[in-house]
Length: 120
Image (cartoon, rainbow, N blue to C red; front, side):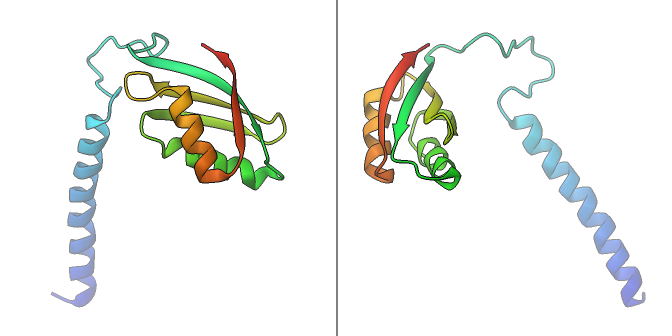
């Protein structure tokens, strides 16, 4: 076979294997069980959300860094940080962490100050 034909065969086989791996990984992700009657609006046990006031951010890049820092804390599921409002909405697993723990770690990592404004 010519080199071009080998490249085509490898590309086709690689795509087939790659798509199988992607499909397998996608199906294994939580919430992607297509046969379940899972309702995304119902919070799971231990799921909680707080709104924090965050001070010390001087530009939008600070909000991005704050979001990444919060998401790296064990037990934090998601974080949405706004430089404009000076707030962060943090969803977390309350069986793993609590606001006192992740706020302390967040402040230590970033140098920003944070305080719980609202608990949901």
